[in-house]
Amino acid sequence: MADLVVIGAGPAGLAAALAAAAQGVTVAIVDAATEAGGQFYRQPASGLRARRPGALHHQWRTWERLRDGLAASDIQLLTDHHVWSVERESDGFTVHALLGPEQRDSVAVHADAVLLATGGYERVLPFPGWTLPGVVTAGGAQAMLKGGLVVPGRTAVVAGTGPLLLPVATGLAAAGVEIAALVEAAGPKDLVRHGRALAGKLPEGAGYAARLLRHRVRLLARHTVVRAHGDERLTGVTVAALDPDGRVRPATERYLPCDTLAVGHGMLPHTDLAETLGCRLDGLTVAVDDEQRTDVPGVWAAGESTGVGGAALALAEGHIAGRSAAARLRGTAPDPAQWAAAAKSRTKLRKSAAALDAAYPPPAHWSGQVTDDTLVCRCEEVTAGAVREAVDELGAGDVRTVKLLTRAGMGWCQGRVCGPAVAGLAGCELTASRRPFARPVPLGVLARQHDIATERGTS
Image (cartoon, rainbow, N blue to C red):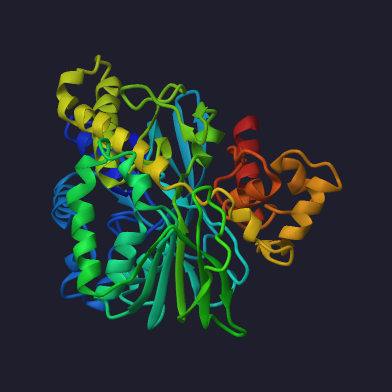
């Protein structure tokens, strides 16, 4: 039993936990990974004996402060806990989590309040050949490098859109991978239009640009991948230039030999737990007030779940949320002056995040390059042609109807991976999908939960 349970041990969760614990409340952190840090501060396993783990990371000193603060605190860190549900009860909250890599047994963590720091996940958009071995997400390539000290191949193309492509390309190049090209759908004019809001990001961007030049990485701006080639595995990709409307320019295709394609089109917030708790969403993000409180009493949210904006923004939001939660758990009114610096940073960083989001949208007409035989939902093996048939011939007008007619989104990932693609192909707006559980749960676990609930009801 804790006063506050923080779900997620990334930048937002760690900042929140440390801020709350410093005010005297008991805190437990629950996270699916084997170590704290989240995706941003992902650590190689100790058995790998990495000599310079800081070389793989941005803002390493910030991580060291978080890590040392956690070690010196009384915070209970529960790793290898995969949260599948949070129940609101009369006396607080119960967090249900599956244990370990096998995830066959469930445990419950009770607390008076909950802070959601569940992060985000990559937007995956299909194209012909995207299911070939050798094609990975940009974040997946980065996770392999940071967590496993391995690279996905010898020659890579890094493609898509968004600021994540820069650290992925430079990280792989520094690890000895030949980067055939960095293929970015956005162009210089897209950034110039938001130059004022992005001024604070210029030094960081300049640093990445210098490293790309040092490794002689070719930048293809206003380009996109139109096809991945290979039989048993990836052997190369075809890229093409985009016109101002986001359509492929005729006669601009070129072939790039490679054995790895790291592709990403931005991030989306994880909101499953917030949705099951009944928290209000603002579009695809969890709606919060100036204290990072949701509209559900006793529930706070911070980090990417409230809007994708990077580690610095997550740290600021986490600090504010932790301070607010601690004060209210002690029965006192929070003093915003205690987090004035963090609030100032939050305002500035949210403007930068909004500008980045506007500057790096996926190509407007990406779906036009997806052939009918391209798999869209890999779990259920649903093709783009089946999605189009559901819309054009069967009258589907929303993602849920497409799902019912084609089974797209009914598989293991429950639409988390294919959802944006299905929505784009169907011409529908991507909306949050309320799911009963945040992850697949064994039937045996659900049966035991039912038995426990029954015993409570009869006792």
